[in-house]
Image 1: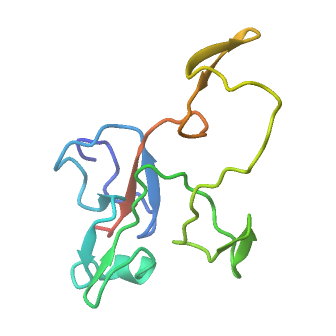
Image 2 (image 1 turned 90 degrees about the vertical axis):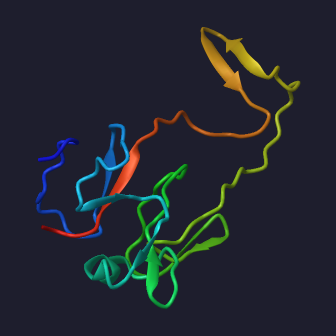
Length: 146
């Protein structure tokens, strides 16, 4: 164990991503795990991880990138061939989709920005975005086993 209480050898394969609900302090991660923050790594330093994820998330001749899950919703990929969702080709693991808001119309006046009451519940209204309620976590990727 370590100061984050993540087992040193938990049996999970290299490339496994976990959601960690605790705070990360610089230097507090066990050496087997890194933040999914889009960092660039050297292939020679992390060959097993490179074999697992390759350059799905970017890279160059001698480097590759970790996935960057900051501010992203994660969705399971279909196994095999690409799928089509909302007229956007989704290739598979590592592919991304931009946000998409279906056009819709209602016969009511624009609500006041802020908090409004509808029936027995409060509804928060934003002019800039549509999103579900969220909770933030740190996504970690297993980089090697020791």
